[in-house]
Image (cartoon, rainbow, N blue to C red; front, side, top):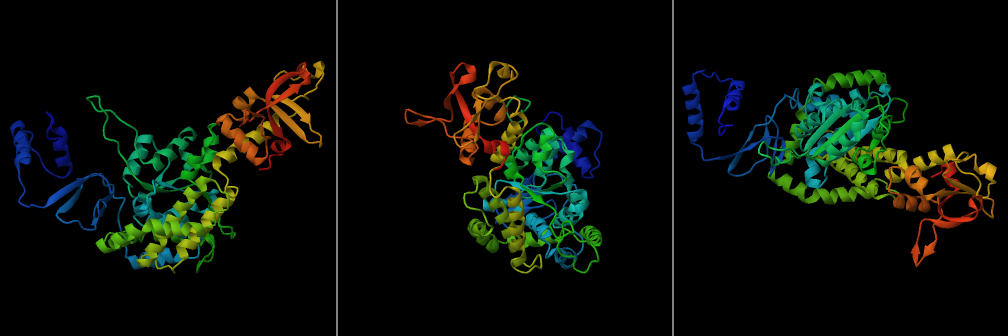
Length: 508
């Protein structure tokens, strides 16, 4: 700002801070000269940072710095919208929020997620999050997002909405670096943009932008733990725009059913409240009366040199130790393990906050909640199947059920029967055991049956699931297609994919 020929931006910052500046041109120039030539008396080195989060061994919030580093102070120069604020005491927060959460797996997990963002860098977690999905009546915002937001600030300011632009989303992520980002109402973001937003948040890097000179600006990066809620999940929302959610997107934002299954929406324990509505109203009010103290208490202990050294050395081992106890089924897809690692980190964060005396919960409370939520997600995930495979099988079954009777004439069909099937996708064949096969032609298989998927990988997945028979062996190489003689085509020999009747049934 000072090096620019026009120093208006520099003066604007000073005026925003409260300084009254003369309109005289010479006086303005003397102000610039003074700032450029002034040498402070203190010899302490000061680091200017523009975002919150870890900076070496210190954690920076807009109004506080936690931890120590010899010979260097910190000045925060980023935006401060008052999102990080506090009211009441830690004991108030424990009594009116954490105590109400105990015994409610969804709430305990949400609060644990609030602490996990601080540990993501130490654990080597690149970023990601969790999405609570359920109907409006389940009370997702008041009983899940509000308690999590109260760890760091007033929910009205700390929690945000999905309705934002890409630039706005980048700014939100930078404002929650190494921490918790809360976004409510997934349906508010355009369906076509939802998948890209999930990647943007989890991958932790803004899009490249050019400088006035033509080069690229340094890319903005972040690492956040996202907690989201909505009436639909990411895959359902993307489907509205005709898109299929990929496995990577689903792994970055796994959907947890908000309904805890106890007949009270998100709740399992009412404690002293008479109804779920009374509980939700009390939690909503308490989260706006007592907030911000839990996050500060957690950082005060975590950022101490002795504790920080211990946690940094042990966090990855402790997370790895917790993963086998979550209940990953044998033969589960690789992405299940990645999601389990994030659940394990949340469990560790909640248990660490309990050990620090922040939550007031009994030991094991956070782990039990994380295990419960993981198993609920796993049950919705077809017990360990990869998201890409689930989408593939659903698409193949839908195609076969829609077109098996209209686009697959018998392989020995008479000419007049064949003439009624102009838009053929293949032929049917009944094997020696009476089983029905569908001989799918190669181009319809690639362009329609496996649309949006790499057809070779899709064929292997279908063969593994028993939906398709393995192909011929040629020159010691296993193919995915078989050569078949089609009587209806004057006994022409054609390469086809042989689908079984299971594909029509749609049983995975």
